[in-house]
Length: 250
Image 1 (cartoon, rainbow, N blue to C red):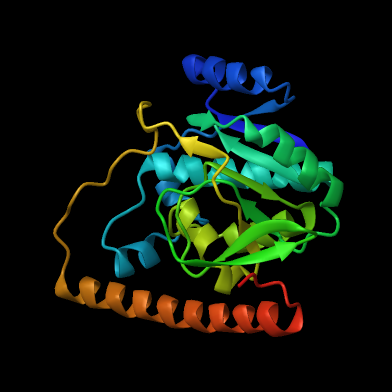
Image 2 (spheres, helix red, strand yellow):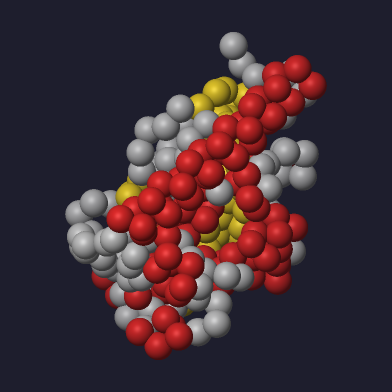
C-alpha cells in the first residue's frame, strides 16, 4: 500500500515532523505537493459559487479550496498507481499501531468490502460495529468530519473523483455525503492518527457573517434533505450488514 502525505512544498517544519514519525515506524511514503488556494479559483467553472451563496451565504475559504483540490490530487494518484493508498495530511500525530494495522490490511485489501476507510476523525459520532475478514471495523451513522487520514481503493477513488468534480463544500463534508457518492465507508477505532492541534491550520476561518432569512431557510431545507437521505442510506446499510452479510457485532 502506498502512503501519500499531502503537504505544501514550503511547509518545511511540517514535512520534517511527519517524516520523523513515519521514519520511526519504518514506513515508506511520498510527499504530494498540496495546492495553495487563490482568490482566482472562485471564478473557475468547477466552483459552484451561485450554489454556495444560495445555501450558505458565504464562499469557501481559499484554504478550503486548496485542501479540496489537494485531496482530488491524492485520489488521482490512487487511480494512477492502481492500488489502495493511505492519504495523510501533514499536521498529524501518528500512533505506533499504524504499521501493524497497515500490514494486516494489506493482507486482506482485495477482500475487504470498504471503498474508503477512515483512520481518523475530529468528533465522536454514533456508529455500529462490524467485522470484515476477522478485522473489527465500524460503520458510521453520522460521520466524524476531518480528512486527516484515510485509505481509498483505486476504483473507489475514480468514483469519488466524479462526485468531487463540482466544488461547493469543504472536502470532509463531501466525504461525509456517502448517500450521494455511494462509497462504502468504514472506520477503525481507536483512531490511528490524530490531528495535531498544536499546529496552526492552513484552512483559514470564514468567521461569522450576516445572512438573510431566505439563505437561512435554504440552508435548513438543504440540511433536512441531507439528514433524510442519510437516514435512508443508513437504514438500508444496517439491514444489509445485519441480515444479509451478518457482519454486525452485537
